[in-house]
Image (cartoon, rainbow, N blue to C red; front, top):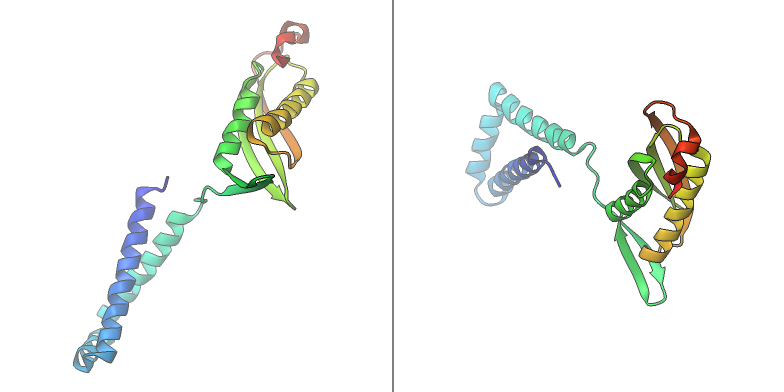
Length: 182
């Protein structure tokens, strides 16, 4: 969802450019006196500066409001009947939910990387302490591959990369958490 400030600056800068552009076209093609009048006003230093400042600020604000905003793209996969497009948000949510099915996983953040027709899935995972991280990571990777294939029909997964970003809680004995891999 786009922020209100982003929508405002998109509309404002578009309308400003539309008005100025329309006035210049009208002044040059339809009514030369109107065009001359615009030119006279723009030659007054304070008015020219204000119009230039408004245009510059509107372009900068439009750019700033769009920084960090990415369109929710789709990843297309070929099937026997044609092409299937799945939103990157849906794929991320699915991978995160698959990882959260493990009781040892407390939080997940997912990133998708397209690489030569293949998909890399990078998960930043926070796990509860006392869990066998190598085994847990391996089982999560396998389950994500299987669930993506079975539920979404995505077989073009190159890598499932797990980064343990945090170990939460006090150190526990690994034998106490044998059920964490289920």
